[in-house]
Length: 63
Image (cartoon, one colour):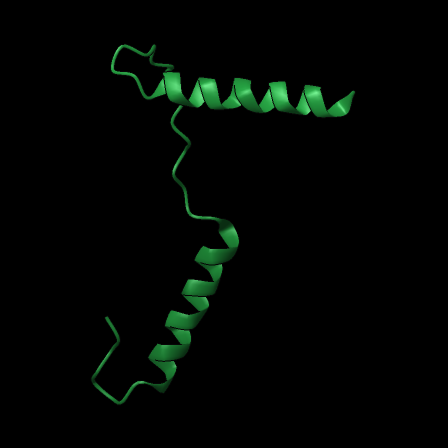
């Protein structure tokens, strides 16, 4: 009994994918995610920059 259900589900998924590629397919607006730097990444970048400033030659600060 599971095989026919899995087959029908696969056919439905493929049909939806094929129909979504049509030029007259309805467009669903998606909410744009908020682009922000994760706290851990920002703190790690700051620590690495401070470390590179500490080991840089005198008068040559990293960009």
